[in-house]
Length: 143
Image (cartoon, rainbow, N blue to C red; front, side, top):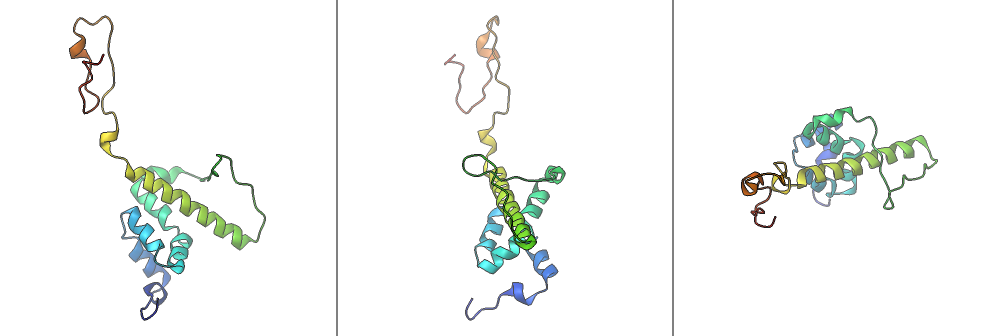
């Protein structure tokens, strides 16, 4: 950041965290993480995505442990290293998991969900009235 001043370095840790905790949208926190490597490390080290997810979805407060699967669906092998590197890897894993969770939970639309049960009866005398509209398209003529 030539010519500019990094406010994360100027403020104390608690003040910087408090300022970034005002962000409500996960995409804003992604933007903060992409400013620089030091800002990304700051977001990871302070678990800001986890805190954001817990604010957005209080039900997650009962989750004791998160596990990240590799691309094949298997757990990653346990690596041996210093306690600092293991702690950092744990924080980075939590960052990835909670960032993905926040993105997925905020990216679906209500229109993508079925709001009423789909039901029909073969013994019904009035099948057109008993088949409900479950999508934006009338499907009773198709049955």
